[in-house]
Length: 104
Image (tube, rainbow, N blue to C red; front, side, top):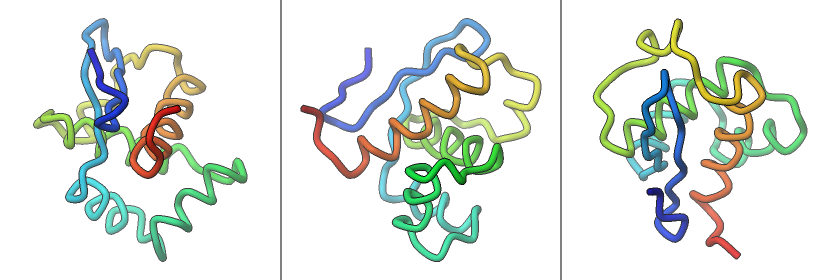
């Protein structure tokens, strides 16, 4: 069960639940992978609805890695993420929000 106070979010991939968390290392990897000018620029893309599928996948992979997962993005190409593309986008946005904002 994810701990929102620790920035964790649950994701179900191919029927298996995983905890995701954007650790500092995961955030640095994410920033480099997406060649973002800054994390704020990446967050703005999500806030403005200007994110891409690549952005969503990169955030999820970074979150999974921060949660201890040892896979890589190619492992998710054929995976079923619960909620489909919309669920994945919501998950990515929630991960970013929880990384920088304590839960209400």
